Length: 430
Image 1 (cartoon, rainbow, N blue to C red):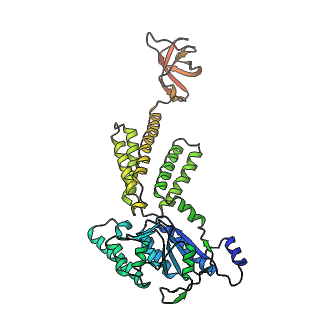
Image 2 (cartoon, helix red, strand yellow):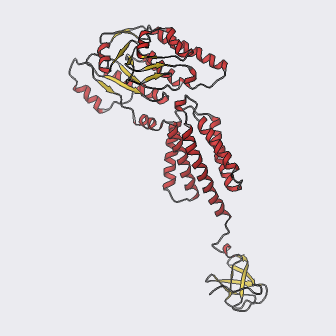
Image 3 (tube, rainbow, N blue to C red):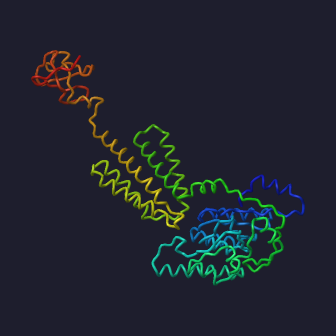
């Protein structure tokens, strides 16, 4: 079990004897994904340790991953502490996966002005043929019927959110017995839950005692906060691209250190964020292909044809990278805003490297080939020559007098093979 924060332990020690323990609240105000499972698991552990009367899940989500939602329902059913689901604040929603979680609560409530529903598997991010869609729809419908029946809620209305993608306002959901309460705020919710008898999934009867209870928000762990911070696939994609560019700069200019360190950190953070999301292998292949086309364009000079193909491959790779509902995918605007600058910068950097590699050597002995100078001594056949202010041992195939302009025809270790410059050649400036 995760150790509890010191402030929570201190508040438990200082609480008056006989006082109602605080309710542990957790917010689901983003897309449902695997890190949400960890957060709920730890919140339930904290509530069990504090002997809280219940765990309060605040819902304001557009939906999320079906597999993560199924795991969350399992955690709620297995919780030793009653779980209350609450759609809040006014104007919020519990759509798609959020509706399933709302049904899973031992007590379900909505704030005035909220709405819920639209639990169709299509909105849960499944892209499938007609047969597979029919199977998943039936499976999801069976799941919501089971949850509704377990908590004495309307099975027909719950099923309509799957097959017909229906949504309901808070008042409609109350009239259809999809939720137990419609309240103004948390204070009213806890007051009206006082003395309410609930039936746990194992059949056990429990009575809630929540009147006057304080509400303590669950504090996510450092890892959970870090993943939540970058869990947005748009931000993760941007960090991945920037980190890749910085690593490329470091590999081509070793010793700068800063770009390499920053690039490695950004890439690792992006991979951490993407690791909790369902990634398509084909989309990763498109991104790799895009980078390869950018590099080939810079080396081969295909007049922008390969770069254009790389940009298209990267754009589609980014859009298809995350296999999930629209809220979890990389936005088209983000993909376009990242792809075009990345393509231009990559082609530019690679072209600089290619031109530098093709440039003739201008340092050391090899850089003296075809350079001109002046015979410092008579070459008969050996002597010395002066080239760029430096004196080199030289050898000539024919005698050359001192002061005669010469050209380096070959380099043999530390000795230069020279020949007389042709008629009309001008000696270099001394």
